Length: 549
Ligand code: ATP
Ligand code: MG
Ligand code: MG
View (cartoon, rainbow, N blue to C red):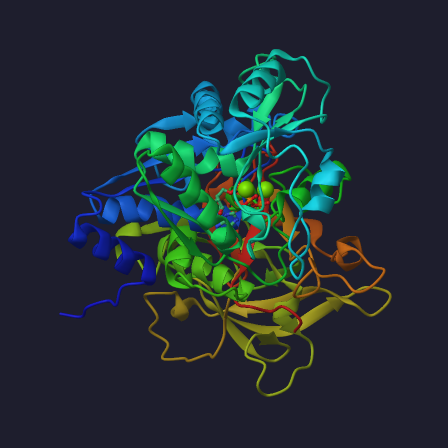
């Protein structure tokens, strides 16, 4: 049997289970509810929930809500919806804000032990005293307050005796540490802001570092998986757990998922939404999970992509084509085929009995025999793609040309004998005859033609709106603009084209979220903007990568 080699996180887990450091696996996904989740978060979700499942453990959802000015209930709700859509369910739900009282008590404990002090430096002075990477910091003049004095001041901080930003609580560690995070990090700041859950209960708020590890500990998390930028915070994570003498989870870092052409940070995404470069968080061009959902991506394809991208210890960027290929591959397997003509030209079959309609049978999915067949009405008046016809064409052009023949998908071979032109000399109608002996599946003619094209019957076709989405940015890394530019300078002016098209009648009743392959064109999904009499289709992805071609 083939043995997949384990990644470094699985190896670390195996080692800790073998040594008895932990007896099981409990992970968590800890988003800050300050925006919608993006495809990078999907990676972390798949990893945390995936490891829990693999090891027979559990995974919590915990909102890291310590930043009242940026957090909202709308984000909390969207995050839960997105995780469920991806196919995961948390074992228990928590909010860091539920731990505010416990964190406060623990802060008093550190003060009593002489490990924390109230500092009267302003934020700017604190930064200044912290030193630089090459120079040690200086001790705060307030560092040697007695435990009694600190306790008293800290209680007054909580009671609202001091103005915002006038004091902070800091851990007393080492102002000369080469790790900046250990130079007496701030634990609490004074901030009068209404929190989305605790309202105005608090006027002091804990920092991320003073919250995260202790929240993990309270929940009994064993493996606290985070991204590389927290590697430098690990000594502080460990320091707090040790000084408090509480359950000590193991923090393990991995590289963030980065994809070419995407701009993922919540800060940037918020700007795109607020300034109207896109039409909301779930605009199908956004890198958000809800954007991919509306675009028509399947949860399976995103999970598969995340699994195949793997886990790394070093930052790198993955080509967006890999994500696009993941959805192509999945939809190729599962999406029913339908015929749609998006840039129509008339094709008239001159020897077809006037008024006759024949129900031809078309295969729903050649990859999936169980998907069966459907009936498609064929008549003497069809629409085909402009692009599938040339009046004169090179030998290798296997679609239809004057004097040539082509097979109509699920229909007959037609021979083009003439065209009709308008005053400007443009072809407006193609005249063909059909060969009755060439009916698809019952061909007795022995004729072979190289090309097969799709079509719809003009009188039966249903008019729909089609949104042709493309990449939002034209460059590999819109997050690293040239001097004097911003991401706005790299927006793709053609990221959305709205056209109208014609689809076979089977799609007249298609429901929102239904995904199909428009034969020979690409994959499409019914958008929620659809109405009873006008369906709207979003292009999920073309059949092949045609970017820049
Ligand atoms: P951003 O600012 O891009 O939204 P963030 O890290 O501030 O990212 P959080 O809400 O703190 O967002 O993230 C929740 C979890 O998702 C964290 O554990 C974080 O490490 C992880 N995460 C965020 N971005 C990525 C990414 N690009 N790849 C993998 N994991 C990520
Ligand atoms: Mg964060
Ligand atoms: Mg953030």
